[in-house]
Length: 160
Ligand code: 4NP
Image (cartoon, rainbow, N blue to C red; front, side, top):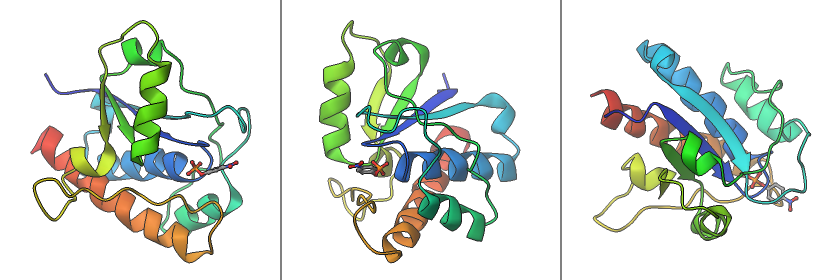
């Protein structure tokens, strides 16, 4: 069965995962498959719940023709492990934190986004998408490019 509901997660749900939600949706639309998918994003930490994405993420998305300004930060819930088929994490710490939130053992598949999207260079080499929150503006362009490649790889895997 093709996983039809996908939740992107990161630490704060204001930088990387909102960008992943927007870029992945955009790529799915370009392929004409978005009607088959439910796409969302969430944080492993609750600090920014209710807030829009970080301005720098909104700007980088806009530069690439994607509007993510309407998204609202939400925290990952244990129910998400029942409600989503696939939960794709930006880094390995997200996977550790998310696993701890899977309180009643929902069956969602939890994986590193770049691994699922097969962006790695070797069998076991899958890069984490670095957290751009404390860095300079180039971090957001890097995150965008990595997210775009992992999105394309994920869609290739799901839809051929
Ligand atoms: P994100 O980035 O996980 O890509 O959304 C961060 C956002 C906020 C914080 C850290 C990382 N923070 O410490 O508030």
